[in-house]
Length: 337
Image (cartoon, rainbow, N blue to C red; front, side, top):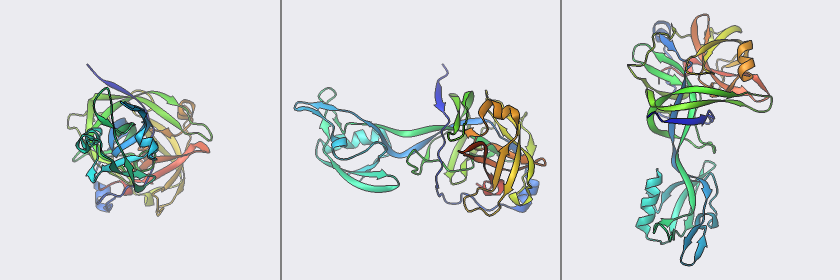
């Protein structure tokens, strides 16, 4: 039976450095290599880099009820990275480490707002389960929806998002689940002035379309499945932001179902040397897209930007004070990963 996972497409922006990511853009390759245009919504799962605290709970033993982690000063959003020097990556790792300690006080290495600190906590043995617990509700992975930018014709290497991915606390994430899944967009929370909108979709766990192996400051990368049908996708060459001009262009994005559509935009500014890869300021001019979404919404990050028949970049950010406007990254900053 197909398993469907309901998601809101909240993607988070941060700086995440990975070796070799954002490698150089070869002019010869740009002129000769061909790329299938993306625009399809895709789901992925990333590691929280430990076990992230999402809530607290009471533990009952023979002496009463206790909240050891909360009493020790831990907070929601903290990530437990190690226990007595033992690295913690999953919920199972934390449970196993607590059993080894046998109820003695433990020292947790905790990450909070990008910084690490130690906290001493004494686990409590739960009277019902007989297991030692800290009184925390935790998660070790985060899932999200983004948009595929391109698929290289020769080797099916893909790039998506156009920006980095991190958790709610802007902490770096690692690849946890290498599968990338097909997503069906089932609704849109429209963007409004002062509030970003978002895509809502069904994350289809039995419809893998690619595998990911790299996440960095300019996106998510991997290889598409050889059996994925690309026959309907337009194939183009790439051009750097130095070739882009102010004026009409297009983005390809999915705001309903699984099929990308072409929408009109205007490039209002070109900045080829922007330090944060905000190489374009764009404005949505397509009346259909504005009517359906209000403009740019979360989950559209990665939508390919095409001008004069060439792939020149990817949509990355929305202006909070004007959802019809946003930033894009030059494709030269995404290729080569």
